[in-house]
Length: 394
Image (tube, rainbow, N blue to C red):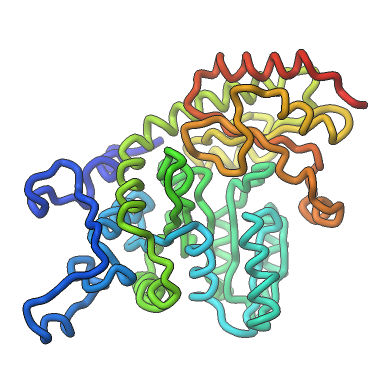
């Protein structure tokens, strides 16, 4: 569970009220430009020290506060905020790979990451990609080649919540001279700290739990490799113009204040809902890391201190039962993102080609559900009315 240091990072770390007229809440530095007394002062600016600024595409004081707080939470040396999670993920790949590099990627990582690899890195940079399940360290070790530059992980992965042995994979990667990257959005730094297990780069989509209110887009990278983060900030982020805006950075700071209490509520509700679904006679399978029925429950207990509000399940019978059930829900909105205050339900792979389903090893009728901040009783009542009005197609 979160430590006292985690809570202090969420509430106070990185903030200096004396520097902004004693304001309890840091201001939004809504400026694109910083000016100087002399030409010499301008040319002596080092925007990477976090205290000097010259142009918003490079950095901003509000952005730096959020970066410091998230890096502290992850136990990393430094962080870099981006305008979206995909901007952060793409920057991590481009910063660690070059033309001709080989990438090992978990089969069920975030779909747009795989599209970036397959649609840009392979045809435009002559890179190659090998997809692995992630649950076998031996499979990963055997798949590494002399050209392998990066291993891309997501744990738990957000379709069926498969989990990776982070310490074991990190040890193999370091022995073979390969960088490791993980999407830690599901757990947040409060429930999992991958850097402690030896992972090199951690990514979060700020749009989800760290923001928490479904009102911003953003991403972040955190690492103990300061040189790598500085290189990403001064080249890829600045050159591609992918820095987060000051208002969005301020919203991240605002969202982080309540992350601990929100995440506890999400977890408590999701566990209650998962147990309800697990006992229902119309449900075939439930996937949630907090359930003891999870096949990797022992590993989860070793490297996670909790699970959040996202889960998935499959109904009995035909795949068509999935969308029919979701359409009967009234309190659960239909939407693709998650991690905000609202509850959501979707059948995310219902329209996928059979080839993709075979690749992902997923059921077409898989329902992914986010338990928001509504009460568990309200959500279960909505589920019950949907089940009562649903006639399963065999």
